[in-house]
Length: 289
Length: 327
Image (cartoon, rainbow over all chains, first blue to last red; front, side):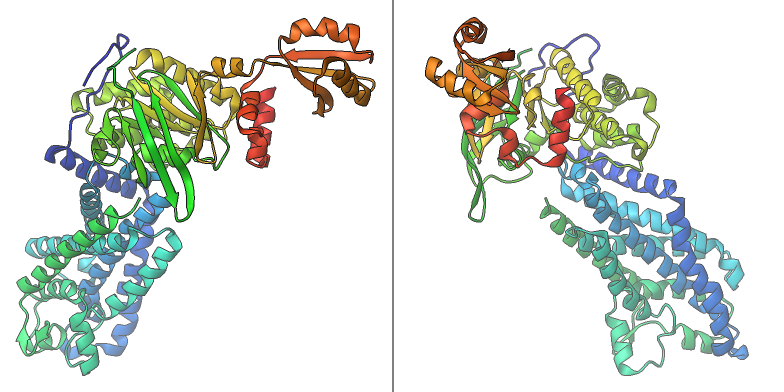
């Protein structure tokens, strides 16, 4: 490449060819922007917190008068706590993914699409960014653990953080694959509501998975979100001091034809699904102009 | 100023159709390194379609194009690495500061880390936005946004800078500022500029212009050569009897005149020399006379048979812009 004659003092930049290093920089900056947007947008941080706090303290307290039997020794709020964490993380992750539609409406997406980087780098950056943002949002709920009688144990916190991050990245990938080709914010939120509400309801976030009628049990088993919520509940219950009967009733785990699916397998399912969705999101993104 | 002998942009038989509609009907042209090349035509003539193909945003349906020596279909990434883009619509993140927007771009384009800061400062100083670097872009006016986009387009030292209607919708002051940057650029950076416009006044600043109409290139040359090719000056006279004046012009000088914009208008070679004869021989009282060199408007008229305004149906906004620009 010829450099030519430039005026003194003008910095002439030579842009290198594509490399892994360049793609990593692209991933990093897309991720960084996601964090900057989150930090700058306090309203969003607060508004996505309102819903889980309502669930935990208003619905939780209200319903506990109805469903808690004193001899069980577990507060309803303690029971839904892992579900509420999952819910927070999912909503935040979906919002992050939805910002792609926003970027399209406001033109910024174009700036990313015309850059000489692989689309995969952009999608990966976006999903990791969404994952981190959602996890940070989840940390605020983690901080409330004491209020619902969940101990602040370092192992529990660490386990939940990892599970939250895994679930967030997967959900962001799901959201990006939906958002990649959508043209308006309204339609994205419509779809998001349609997808998210049933998934949360059917994940066992709000009720135990034991003794359900066959059709409902089936639906919860095919709901991918179930495998993200169950490990969180498992982690919380393993740090509670309750009788085995209570654990069986409230934290039965997921069973396939009588086989109790181990937590590691559940997490594996979420991770595999995350990778598959990431692949779909990248493929969708490659097809957009 | 020169880079290599190879053209900055080389287009051969480039075509784009959408269904049955041919937006671009097989055009050929070359842009020399270091020149400011204008693509002139009414809205809907195929300007944006062409620029989008050159920028690898849409795939041509026929023909080929090379930008900075790379094929726009086969070497898409290489083309992208070597071009800067400023679109008609803003593509900035309003929630980030001006500097953060540029930093994002630098990382995405892989600008070497040791020069990023210096380069960002330089391009922002060029468009006089360095003192606003920490302000959120959403607080910027339309003109400031456009200036920032030009700075961003230059950040990675592209070989070719594409500007799609860079001055549309801006106030006259900002428009002239943007032309100031473009003129400065040709001296400081080793760059070729390819721009589209439908403002005739602005096409004058280009080294060469291509007039495009209905998806075809009608003519390519320097503005001077194009105006000279018409060879006739425009004479406008105010008279007490327009009808009589038109009849007299036909009878005595064999000139076709018509009333345009309220005055009798006709074209004649060497207008100044014709004026004394006009007064001596017309026989109709003349109140005032003006002679003007052919403008690019006349060139466009001559080559396409309509004024650029008629061609795009005179939208309200553009009429206003033109009125502002004419002052």
